[in-house]
Length: 292
Ligand code: ADP
Image (cartoon, rainbow, N blue to C red; front, side):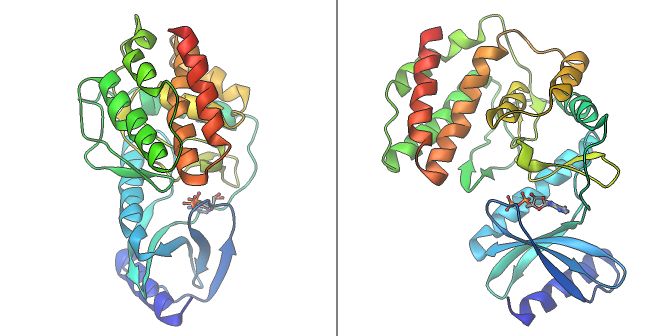
């Protein structure tokens, strides 16, 4: 990356923090799915820098807005956003750097309680004030009072249509959409503030073992969607679920709906990465239709 890029980042961070920030060291970091990440340091402090091509500026602005939304709720620790911008044909986002450590005895329990606190939010509608990006796929957040139609149109149908454009037609997709209301018998979710992309890759522990979360894709929706995604790639520590359930018990219909909610992410994974998420999405759909 060119010197001009880092000069521009130095100037923007200095201005955003009202303190000069001459970069004296840079370290590449691994672990992100989408962006290049680095630790940038001056003599007295360091920040986390993500960058990508110019088209990602909107995505970084969305991430900054989502971090503001989560930190405003005061439930989780999230990295404080410093600034975002464009320099030398690259877009970037600068965040507080949080040094990673290992989870302590009570870390997962605390994370479960914090998620329950985040979800106990009385919000006026489903959706959000802006669209955002899940992975690299657009996520439509136009507000609605009707969760079932919101999840049907702005989540499942959107990904099914995209999958078809990408060469995979989900068999019985329309049939599943028509029967969605049967998954909500006796259950009427209220809008909760969501992390929106809560998988283990977006959870960290600081050097004291205190949890923090990052890379959110916020909107207001059924709280079960966060729990469902947390289980999709193997699941979090059992203490996390026990603490969540104690603080904010889940409805028994969650067991079926979590497959429905994860179908959204599975289709998105097909749209981002291709096979085998097409056959997995079909298996999930077949399983869901057996409940109808
Ligand atoms: P991407 O947007 O490319 O998926 P992430 O936001 O997931 O990137 O970050 C990549 C990795 O960097 C994470 O796996 C995590 O270990 C680390 N990380 C994320 N945010 C911070 C931060 N604020 N401070 C320090 N390390 C971080």
